[in-house]
Length: 131
Image 1 (tube, rainbow, N blue to C red):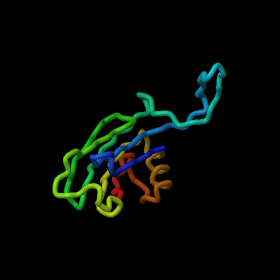
Image 2: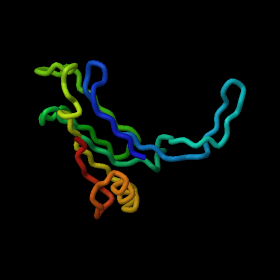
Image 3: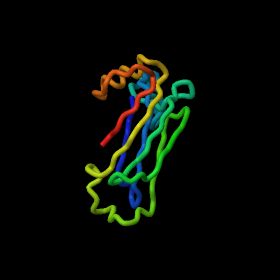
């Protein structure tokens, strides 16, 4: 599962992309009781991490870019936004994120694109824009 966020983070504007894997092998102890085989999403382990890159734009102006060859979580935040009152911005309308994800296989890229209603990719690297 790929989770993406963008918007206001307190007094900053930022974005995140997370890579999570469905698992049924999680167990833990809580208040003396053991919970086994819980269904949940865990962060990707070292072998499951993906190549991720994103650039965040506000009103068409680049705020910042982040890139990682292998990651399960990539974040970025821009403090001190000038010329804008970030409390009154319509971020849904004015914040745009361009994204590149390199999946482990073409099949993974196709599954992601299908669920995200994107064009079928020809390679394991997928580029798209989230407005």
